[in-house]
Image 1 (cartoon, rainbow, N blue to C red):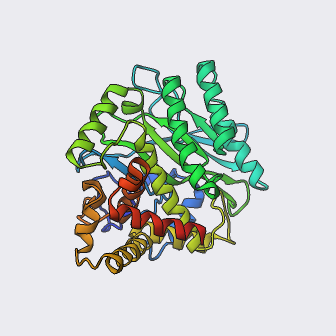
Image 2: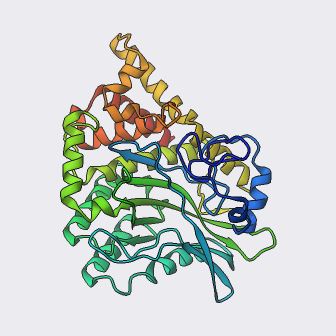
Image 3: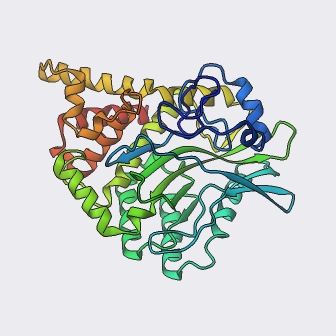
Length: 388
């Protein structure tokens, strides 16, 4: 039995996850999930973390956090609506435009769709995105279209965002893709998402969202979205975002000189780390999943959940640093020189090692040669893994 939010392995009949505090779905709710999830749950035997057994069967979300609310629940109820022989599953809460809310729904899912190849998958993602733009301002749609073209992102939904702010976010991608041109083309979605004002994350990298399954007997191929979520409570409230990031930077929670744009760089750090893992497991793409790449896919997510490959990269960088500097500083002390958040832990008290990598990348993005030595050594190893 696994948590439907963080993938943590649970004791039988658990009502709440002891790792993230999530309310566990009932058997009735599970029976209403997509049929392929039932088949998937029978195959999972060893992946302990980050494997979701409901509609989103794997969600490995790495968060930029100002404070962890251990009792907060992140469960979304799901209803089904039929349309044109497809089943689209949507959030129970209808989106309403308000001061800090978006009309965009990021978690629609489809089943029974004819998917013959990559282009069908991309077309479906684009169709879902475009169908939500009817009432969005022309100017922001023009910015979205330009970012899609420039940064090879399949779909972008920033409907209510300030136009100039959206352009500056695009410049973060521009700077990073200039230094890492080979990482283009894996992001499918950049989107605003409605999150409660009491929730703590600013932005989140979601490497896997099971967006659609096929009309075949075994439901393959599955269409996977890889997306970045921007919390509307911050990205539609620049004053709150600036105050939070400034306080975090001044206190050492985030790297020095953090800006309202740099949380995107942090999430792109997770993205690059994830791509390095994909190379390690010889996966050229996860857009379409079928029997040919399913086993490698499981291995990737087992590792992503456990943080083993992230820790391997960190240790390699740490040994390089010690060799070059004759320094006996401990690994955790060394990671802590990046920022406090580089030592982030989950609710079980286990280190989230990929946060160290994301914060290293964040630091180097902001401070270049003035970044901490730990950040520079870690980013150097990350770069080698991506290029290798």
